[in-house]
Image 1 (cartoon, rainbow, N blue to C red):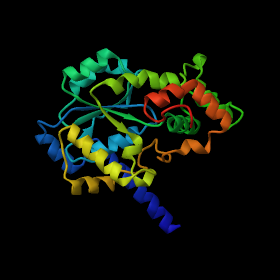
Image 2: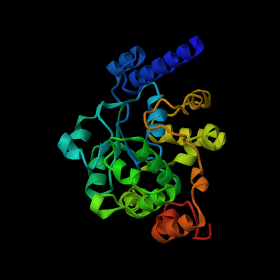
Image 3: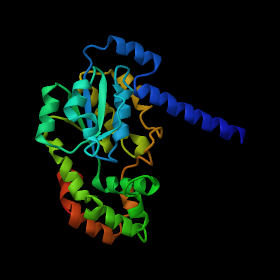
Length: 282
């Protein structure tokens, strides 16, 4: 009982400390923010459930980077902030803007014209589908929770997640990936969740280290291998409020032959386009 209480307090403290660190409010980061002049301004474009908080954590573990105190920006709430241009203009050196924003040429132009570094994180659409499904079922306040909770079983939920529902303003998995696909052709750094997650999430340590090195090289804050390794040890964490498992290939537990056929028919193209399969023979 006592040990369990202590562990819970430690977990709570760890999450609170991480909140301070990610928003640049720890003593060390506050001191560095006062001298930030040439640090990059960064925007992260993330497909929902593709590793948003994993990418954010990787960046915010750097001593000179921190997240802007703004909710993850989506197309639904963008007008609340006066549009993307206003958010970009307000970014300070070393600040990170995290978003789920569809691609448009105007948005790409606005980001480029301000010299802001863009990073786009992607993940296997099948794992995105399963992760999003469990997130919706868990979050009772989610606008789609009732719709999914009314489904007869898990197979029905998976079919709904694949097809979408126009009347509920819920796009298919194919449409969602299509709306982000323009970022693949931009000059953004493309980061794969599977490369960043590391061995704790079923990936490879070498790929994680290479990806972290490329990430910090891209934004102009290169790190020596020893520091990258130290950062990688802190990367996999359940401190995120949306964290579930963070594993690669979890879709295989839920995709029956029927679900596979449906997914191939609806979303086989983005699966190939994003580089997760070469054809439909999976």
